[in-house]
Length: 141
Image (cartoon, rainbow, N blue to C red; front, side):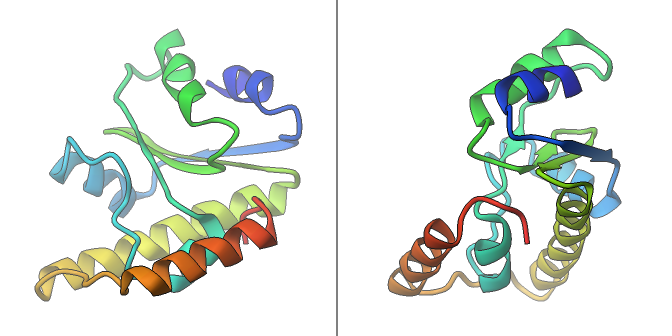
């Protein structure tokens, strides 16, 4: 998995793989989820962009790395279905901060779900935030 990422992303200098409980729970509760539903969290959009849920592969298998490739290098933060999360960056701090941001966002979204669901921002605001993210670069904040 790590080797596949480094091969696909020459700018990657650090990879942090973890098992954040709430992020994993999203992939268990919603097995067909393609992306974390972060369109209600402006900070998440600005800091990380969209967060894909990489399809399941048996832990430790070559398939784990193969399943990552379609999401690289566009995504620096992703949930590994039924397993964990992966963040990469140009520094260890960037990759670590991505993991922290992911679990925090997943906890907020879980709380919103329990209260009736996270309501997305209006489309015009989402596009403005996505454009700000594009202008700001791909690094995890």
